[in-house]
Image (cartoon, rainbow over all chains, first blue to last red):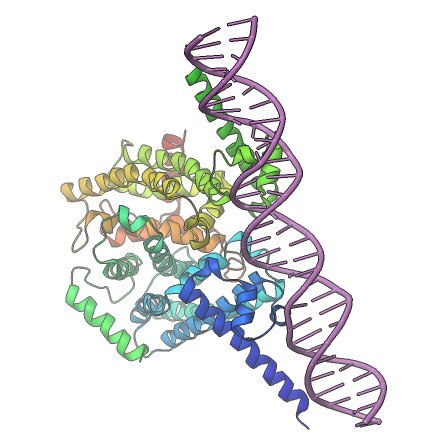
Length: 236
Length: 236
DNA sequence: TTCAAAACATGAACATGGTTCATAATGAGG
DNA sequence: CCTCATTATGAACCATGTTCATGTTTTGAA
């Protein structure tokens, strides 16, 4: 008698429906106009039913972010296990991250909002933990790449731990995207090729770490080829 | 007869009172509990009076951010005009930024929130423009440093424009601070010395750009001395 | 000094939208 | 078919941002 299980499955399917619909509404009408009552109605459920799944609006947003973050982290893990040099893998993280953001335009805005004090502190502890839990495996994977590079002598960590070391590429990638997406910033600066700028600076940082084999920063064609190869082999 | 002027001055003083009190309330009780009615009451004014200064709550927040951003940019301009090598000045930007964030702990959280779609799009166009206007001089100053370095042959821009080039150090600094302040991130990673990590990566990036004179990344004492000197000479 | 008009301050009323909960509907087990 | 537990419902509730009719103050001319 699988009654219990069937109910459970139905419940999960409904939760997914709420999340998918919320995502659609956000995509179509923006984050700020998302309304709990309208979301429930759009799914043909009452408001109260929605609240059986999510303790608050903030909770829903964190859940939404967690789901996409899961996909995001899965991509990173794939990069970490990619058959390529440690240097290429480190760079591939940036490429993959940039492509993921481009494929999901509302994702980074949602993330930015979710990590805001106003949202984060209002969400349930459980939701917050479930989000941060997504990070653990990816941190482990990437730390693994860094440690492999250190062991092979392809990079010299110096005073930094493996985790402190990987924070650099992460910061370049995250910071650059954050700046470029901030309205009124791109207008201020004359950035003709934002993607290329991100990639170049990612390579610059790795060169600065003396991560072997060094990349010739002036080699535009080589950079394009590398990016193209990563997209082909990792994002297929 | 300076009646007109007196009224104007009183009006500005009141606006400042609102802003200062808002800042205090945010510092004491957090961003999310800030209430317009309570803020007005705390200043011994009616709610409506507050709305004669700020079109909405979001407007108030943008105004608040603009004010601090003004101080922040002034510091950056001071760095740009500091009597030191271009390399030292570029690095000093990171140091000054980090110190400023530390001195004003609620500032970066406010900024993060203000640049959120939900807040930014809700604020008046005028307020937004006034905020972005603060950036123009600082972008010009720093671009000037970059161009000076290029002219002196202390750095080779390659395919990047001066503005694209300066985006790198900016992104490292901003991205690193953003990551470190994101709750549940620091817990995940074992970062023992966040400040040092920021500084090292800033130097790494500049080395990667081949920005002369190169810095010995392993030289912990030299780094400390440089930071100490910047704090003394620029932040005095 | 007086007074009409303009400017301004007030805070109760309003509007919006997140959240709850009394009630109704459902369906499982007997 | 009945009973009871579980779940769905959506109108009512509540917190807060915003407005606006009203009262007050200031201004400048008579």
